[in-house]
Image (tube, rainbow over all chains, first blue to last red; front, side, top):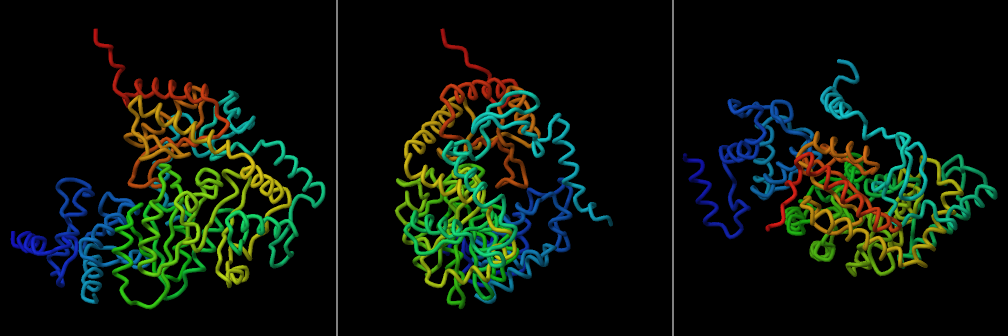
Length: 105
Length: 404
């Protein structure tokens, strides 16, 4: 898959593997969010989409949401303030927030 | 939608809990007999879950001080200090705590919760950044809801994670306030404070340390992790409570900042609640004297920690990462934890049960807190009882037969 190839290249060329040196694409961000949320699907058949409401459609509590966000923060080298997390409901909104923050870096 | 409908999930979980025959969150202590014993369900039980680290709730000198204060000044202050004034004993208590830490200023609060809530939410204001450990106490999380600062959470006890987050703030204007705890209340682990302080210095961040569970327990003089880690001077604010080692209720914050006292007219949890009653102030002042005069209580506490922690570890229980006055016993899930807790109560031993969402990483725990005056016999009995229940419930492997 193209996405994961792009991923590997970045990791290999980076001294600090957890930090993106360039602006990630929307596809990369969405793909990483889906990886983080995979364990919280309510059943194996469930597909995570942009419109998936994280705290409602998935089997995840508020603490686990915050922990997942911490992983994403380190993956993309941004900090998502807790105050902003309250406004994030869907996978799309989370991706938008991360993209906005990476653009500002 | 009704007001209670949003709690439907919690109601279901709570119903599960109560199927075990007792509600761990509404236990009735029919009579508390001593720092280590209480009558529950008509039966004398060993209490190993009350945060009573030095056993001072029944210290005769502390009890007498409280009785004398009630006789002299009545049962309560009936108002806040900004409205009804400070009693001279409030001021004396603040001076004594400040002196205990070698700091210039101290403010006393009616609870430890209110100390954290008010101080943290007020210190970090608009345009500032508040950085908190992921496993922070509820009072710290609630301060995050009240503050106008931007809140960033870092990985538990991970200075590198804090470093990354401070680095990402770059040259944005605004103060950085980092909040840490001396000993974390669920698993009894301590913060790597020296390393955290290094990171904070690198970025010019202020440090606030909550010593709620470490007052008395850590440091040569019992001042907490700030003392044992040798960084007392580097901690800008130290918060603590009177409700654990000091055996009463109340909270405090000490600091060397020359403008600290402005908090008396800005911190709402200080301004808009009644001040501590004379009896509490008196017993706390006496308890602080006992902490200073009887360092052997600290040694007894840690001896007891070693007995329980090492004893349970030897039987194969999965515990928190290090010795601490709180010993958290990991159990595989919520219902096993509740069942285990109930079986211990039936056997006459009271501990706390901690289940998600009150625990980090969704773990289910039996939370034991030790007391300096627990006897070795009491704790060895407890290990034996827990081992029996653990085998019966399949949490521990069956007893190994000696090879013949």
